Structures are given as structure tokens and as C-alpha cells.
Length: 149
Image 1 (cartoon, rainbow, N blue to C red):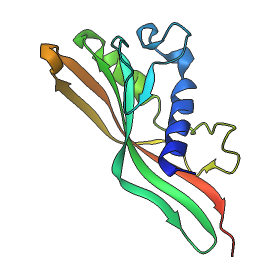
Image 2 (image 1 turned 120 degrees about the vertical axis):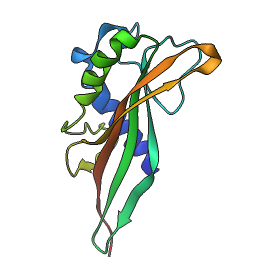
Image 3 (image 1 turned 60 degrees about the horizontal axis):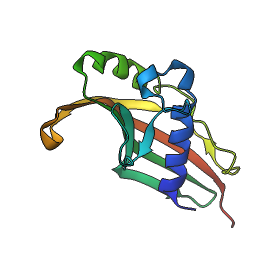
Image 4 (image 1 turned 90 degrees about the vertical axis):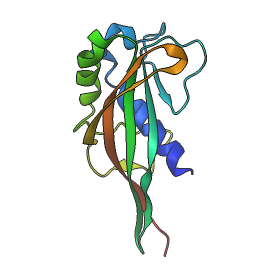
């Protein structure tokens, strides 16, 4: 099992668990939050969430079990400065949220809630269009079960 794939699936499920609290502009036609792991499909209009794993932490093996401790960057990308506060509040709802473990990972459990390590705000200008990124770095800790002795 790929650690990053498992963790990204947990984050996707956790973000989707907040669908009832999401600003309407963050929802797709199917009523799900527009949240993507590293790469946004073409023709997806702003705003949307992009999350990616930071190069720190990872899988830890001990003589008796496996767990992971990693940091993920989770940001909303928007072209509207007026909406930045609304999106910051929405992403902030991930802080202290118990991670949602998809049923496809029966041996995985959350060690702790998601924890905001630091908030983030940035401005980029791809193709002369200003895009605001608002969100933060979030710590995700998972338990992968006992190791065979």
C-alpha cells in the first residue's frame, strides 16, 4: 500500500465530510467539494481545493507497529479576494477534525485529529490572472497496524 495514496484518500474523505459546511462555489455539479490531490483536471473553474504532501515525516516502523506522521498543504485557490476570509474559515474547519478513514482501508486508524501546523496565504499570477491561495499546513497521523514479528 502506498503511504501517500492512503493519506490522500483519508484527506479527500475528511474534506468531503465537511460538504454541508462548504461555501456553494466550492461544490461541483454532483454536490461534492472540489478538492484535488496535487493536480486539478482541466476546465475546472475556480475556486477549488488543492492538497499536496510536504517533504517531511512519513512512515515509521517499530518492532511492533507501523504509523505515519506527515504534513500536508491544503489550500483553496480563488480569483476573488472578497472570498478569501470565507475560504480560510472553511479550510480551518479541518483543524481538530477526526480524519475520516475510507472503508477501503480497514487496517488504518487515526492516531489523532488533523492539526493545523501553520496557516498559509499566497498570491500567484498564472497567465496574468491573480489567484489567491488560502489554507494551511496540516499534520496527519495514522496507524497502520501491528507488524509481524
